[in-house]
Structures are given as C-alpha cells and as structure tokens.
Amino acid sequence: MKLSTRIGLAIGVTVPLLVLASGWLLLQLVNHDLHSAEDDHLRTRAAAVAQDARALLRASANGRPKAADNRERLLYSAALDVGVRVIGPDATFSGGPQPDDSVPLPAEATNPVTVRDGATSWRALSRPITTARGSGTLWVFAPNAADQAQLRLVRRRVAVTTLLAVPLSGLLAWGIATGATGPLRRLRRRTAGLDPRTSATRLHHEPTGVTEVDDLAATLQKALARYDEQAARTAEALDTARSFSSAAAHELRTPLMSMGTNLDILAAHPDLPEPDRTEVLTDLRHEHARLLGLLVMLRELGRGDLVEAEALGGVDLAEVADAAVAEARRREPDARITLDAAPGLTVHGWEPGLRLLLDNLLANALAHGRDGAGRAGAEVGVRGTEAEVVITVDDRGPGVPPEERARIFERFRRGPGSSGSGLGLTLVAQQTALHQGRVTVTDGPGGTGARFEVRLPRGGGELPAHRDWLIDTAGRTAGATAGTNRSQSFPKDGP
Image (cartoon, rainbow, N blue to C red):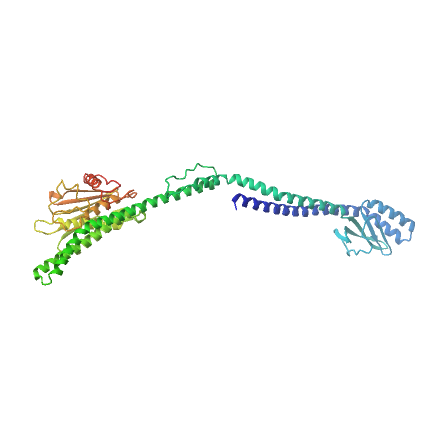
C-alpha cells in the first residue's frame, strides 16, 4: 500500500473518531447548559409562587373555600409556564403541566431532579411550606421536551458531520500526502536505474527542503560511496593476490628446481660419499631456508598492501625498538648491538608494520654490516621532535655505493653473495610509505659503513590511496626508490 494511501486511510478513520468524541462532549455540555438554565428558571418560579402557596394552605386550613379558590387562581397565575402542585395536610392543589398524580415523587427535591412519566420527562423542584395550622410541600415542574428536541438536533448534526468527515478528510489527507511524498517518488525514480555493478553513474540529488528526503538521499549517496570504496579495495586485493601468485611462482622456481636437482642426486646415488652427501644436504637446508624466508616476506608485503586504517593507533617506537633489538641479540648472540632510544616517542601507526621495519633494518645491518674482522654490529637510535620521530640504524660494513642507493629498495634486489629473499629492504620502504614517512641511505658516522635513516611524522595521516608493492612495476619502482634516496616522500602508489 502506498504511503499516501496509508496516510489517507489513517486520517479518514481518525478524523471521524475525533468528530464523534467532540460531538459527545458537545452533547454533554449542551445538556448541562440546558439543565442549568431550566433549573434556574424552576428556582425563580418556586420563589415567586411560595407566598401564594402558603396563603392557599392557610385559607384551606381555615375552612374558607372562596378564599382558597382565589388564592389558587393567584398561585396558577404566578406560576406562568411551569406546573405547580401544593400538597397540604388535608388537600392537594395542582395546575399547569406536570406528571400524573400516580407518578411517585421523591420525598424531597431541594435541588432539581428528573421525574419520568412514561416517555415524558420532567424537571422537578420542591420547597417546604410552613403555616400556623400545619406544613406542606410546594412542587414546581417543567417539561424536558424542548431540551430533548435541542439535544436530538445536536445529535443529528454530529452524525451528519461525522459521515461527511469520513470521505472528505480521507481525500484531503490523501491529496496532501501525495504532494508531500512527491520528492520521495522522484528520488525513487532517480535511484531505480542505478546499478553500481554495471555503471559508474551515481545519485545526484538537489536539496528539496524536506529533511527526511534529503537525509535519505544523503544516506543513499554514502552507501554508494562505501560500495565504490569496498569494490576498489576488493579489486586491489584481487590484484595483490594475483601479483602474489605471480611473484611467488617466479621467485620460488629457482630454489625449487635446485632442491629438485639435489633430491634427484640423492635418489640416483644412494651410495654417495659422505662429504658429497653432506654438501647436498647442506644445500637443501639452505634452499629450504631461503624458500621459507621468501614466503614469509611475500606474506608480509601482502599484509602491508591490505592493512586498513582501523588497525592504526598510537605506537611507542622506543618500546618497539627495544623488542626488535632484544630479538636480534637472541638470534645473533655474538653481534654487538646497541640501542639509544628516548622514552615516550610515539607515532600514529601500525605496530606490526613498524616492528617489521626495525627487524629488517637490523637483519640487513647484521647480514651486510660486518667489520674487517668479520664481526657483525649495529647501532640503533630513536630520537624525535614535536613533528617527527627519526630512526637510524648504523652498521660497520663496506657501505652502499652511491650508484646503488637508488635501487636497493627494489623487489628481489640482492647484494653480492646475499642469501636473503631480496625483500627485506622492500618491506622497509613499504612500511615507511605506509606511515607517510621517508627513508634514506647514506654513509655511516665517520664515513664507515652505512646509515639507514627513517623519518616518520608523529601525527600520522591517511593511508596511501593505492598500494601495490607486490605488483611488478620495475619502472615506477626504480623512479620512486630514487626519489626516496634523495630524501623525498614515497608516492602514494609505493615503489
């Protein structure tokens, strides 16, 4: 059922009920007013004829019939339009309109009461009369016929008004509701053809001045915007999944083929000498570790591409750095790792991503930052200003040549003799871009080794609009990385 029809029916039922209720109240008020006017008239007549009624009783008690007749005529003349009945000790005198003598009267009626004589009703009032020879009662009566006629007229008019109110109020309400719901119908027509799956057309709404309609249009626009956002995120997730599969297939081919070759050697030569067998097994373990590390790094890249803004919050970088250094010391007990971090340096970020950033910077420093004696070492510093927090990781290795600094953050870029996945520094660059920061590579303090410096804004910001670190876009990656090493911010697309 349409809204306008519902409103028309509702008002078409409600208005007659209100008319009936108002008519009933009006009847009660009219009845009360008529009775009040009649009662006041009875009291006035009773006061006017009381003296003549008293004289009539005295004349009757003294045995003077002629005088009694005169007093009786005077009584009826004074009564005018009401009926009078005087009940004395020895006789009863009555005249004018009044109930039949057989109709019982109350013992007394100092206030007006209703007396019924068949289908006729009367208002009656009594007054006691006292004389020297005895006492009696004066009754005055007024018929209710005029009052009842007026009440019947009011009832008929209320009934007619109610019958007219049913269709008129319903039609009027339906017409008003139809006009009021016009903006809703226009909004429905505009939204009926929208299909976000097949068309990029979206709802364009001009304010109508009707708050409910404008609010509904705004809600629809917001819902469509959220649909577009989620569709974009879904497409991005699908691209990430496809890229993950492609990258994994490409990078896993070499270690898997190497492992297959070694397994074929072991299967074909069960009597392989122990030194050769040990070499093959060592190679298998090495390739297995490389394979496992590569899968872990690819998974972490995927997580960074898909992290949502709701996952970000306040992160104490001093605590994260302390945990990362403790883990590095556990893995490399012979390495010399120091930490200089001021407490209370917080940023708005993703804690797992920041931990991943520090873990990979430390792993890179320990893998490539050994001194001439072959001992690994790293110095981690965390300092900050009101606007940003700066993380530095220094090593004691040969450093990074200036011509290579523009490329070390590319995917699968491995240094000479590296056994890693080639994704550790890519993860560092990804997490830096995710936190709207920048990363640089320079010479270490005193010109020895390398220094990796990450600058992160303390207040954070919105996540990059597009993240595709798993997608193989070498040209854009190289350009973005070069910009990074010139201390410029990463593009929102990431390297």
